[in-house]
Image (tube, rainbow over all chains, first blue to last red):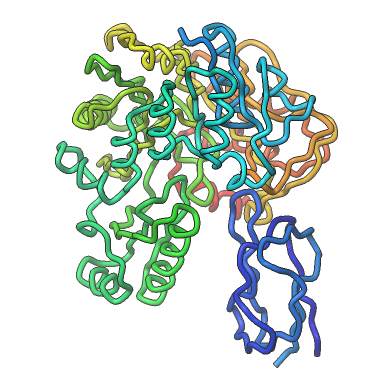
Length: 73
Length: 449
């Protein structure tokens, strides 16, 4: 089943830790957001495979914006 | 005094520095990323210049551009504020090479204290106690694990170039230590361009106490007493006060800590404003952690209890004037400062950028607000979440708490999630009232209440 991974805060994308096709384990980070001088990782809540990446490093993103799409493993 | 001074900063501290300059400097020109007619700091200043886009790497950290503005506009002095370029030795050197006065210490002492591992070694040599830990840097994960196994957990991993709580992690086990090593190296590299780390004993439930120092060109070093900054979240200060409540528990502690701070500053031939940060264990032992070679965010509490203007003192010292005598300085009454952050204490203190609708600051006797925002104002994700510092001064700590509570009630910040209500609850809390807290206390308190 496909899941959308969203930004939980308004900020900028500091790092994208995964690529399309990567298998990601629960608790591993997809993306690290930066807002107000704080790093906030977005981690996998379950084992999954990355199927789509919709943002790039350095992008300004809004809370709720979809950053990537994953398929539950 | 100086003819024209550039404030290489933004927000509340730019406004704060400009206020002192209005009395002392003929003309001044703060630099600003986006000078709108509505921001407080360009409005207060005589001139304001665009330094670049909102992102700091292209604006407030752009040394070349800032120097060019200072030179083109005929400035003879530069005040860096705090954060940004304030502890950047390259910037200090460039300002002085260009023939202007940098308001702050030498580039050499800045580099020494900026390297936390080197600063530890220097403090030890000066006879100032440091937290037991690794001799210099440990940059290999396996070596760190080996060290921690012989030294004992828990350990604190710290980025050599870190500060302000950035690049610092506690590890209680091997797995956590390996993760902390990676994180601190990565954070040190990304934030400060230096991946070096070192390890320290993790002192459980410490208090954060710092001593304000000042040095002049004549070799005098004085201290302006202590500030207690133990109420923190994520190793960053939330409430600061002077005098420190912990001093009542340990007679003679203040004098010993102040003496250590003065000794260290003298050994470093320190000039201008600086802060020596210590942790104090529950048993009353104190250890040097770092020196901040700049004006501190929380300097208002020191100003309120000493009656001095620290920015004025910085300018006078930079001009070659001698400092006042230590014996002429006194700590009068009690001051408390609450940092008003755009963040949600109930959601793990997550930052909350947004739009301020209405904004009304409290006023009255013994109430001071340092801020760089106003109503109908965007708080962006590009800078830190501090939107204002609310400080009060009264005869006693209890009276200061009461005054702070009233001022917090009067403070209107509409449309934005802030920690104002949390501060308000803290002022009535029995444990806070008793001065019974440590650096991890606030995070526990928020979860429990």
